[in-house]
Length: 297
Ligand SMILES: NC(=O)c1ccc[n+]([C@@H]2O[C@H](COP(=O)([O-])OP(=O)(O)OC[C@H]3O[C@@H](n4cnc5c(N)ncnc54)[C@H](O)[C@@H]3O)[C@@H](O)[C@H]2O)c1
Image 1 (cartoon, rainbow, N blue to C red):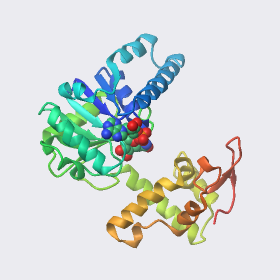
Image 2 (image 1 turned 120 degrees about the vertical axis):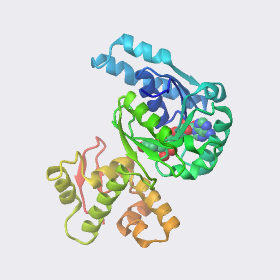
Image 3 (image 1 turned 180 degrees about the vertical axis):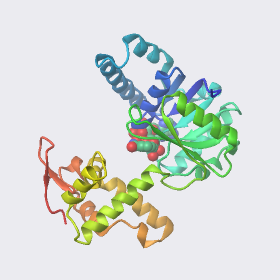
Image 4 (image 1 turned 30 degrees about the vertical axis):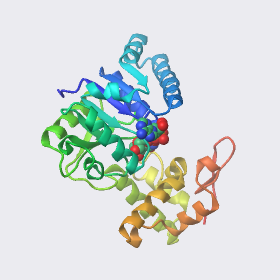
């Protein structure tokens, strides 16, 4: 069992709110904090709806829901909670300077035994651990969206992360009912998103080379590989601009043309065809959300 009893989640957006609820559901005392009071109010409403729906579907009892909410505090007072936290999970905005400043402040307030963890999708532990006083207690705990549902949590070791921190973080992930995937060495993108990216790159290569069209490639992934949706369908769902910006940043960092966004993706982003959210991406969507195959190029 991990020594963690009290958790502080910093950031009450899409990820932080659900991570906090997952921890409260598993019996931990949790404070979820945000700079923005309205983000906390929105998180509270959204979590109420989700938990009420779980009760209605018979997945949990009303008593379990109420007990979980009793363990969850939504507050703008970060520092009071930080003073007694055994584990801090940062899920604030994806900006390195914000995260480094947050961790510098938190490491000065939290107990020296506390583990500091980031949910960042793109920054590796060493990019943030150098801002804290005990980098051996720093790791990434990378949850997937939606955190209430997705089972995987990547536990990422930085160059200074101690064995004890990795053991506690991994045990904690199992205690909240998730499946820990341990990375013994940091690498941008970690495991799942790197594999997803490789599949996406190959799908675009096949399309741009004229080997198969969007629908054929998606169909192969669904019917031969058992994917719940094809790579083009997934890009349309998550937003084509998201992957584009990640690649642009990676290219800026590495200078390797293999890291640059593909021509077809750049064309769609330039046209503002970003996927479902704009009604057009690799596919065209009707007002009711039905998809129509087109030639996007
Ligand atoms: N959205 C995803 O699919 C996803 C998946 C895995 C990991 N992540 C990572 O999780 C983190 C949060 O992403 P999100 O999608 O929940 O973002 P979001 O924009 O929905 O929420 C971020 C929240 O952080 C708050 N915030 C910003 N600066 C803060 C500060 N200094 N102190 C306290 N709160 C602050 C904002 O007010 C906002 O409510 C990012 O690092 C992101 O890379 C996101």
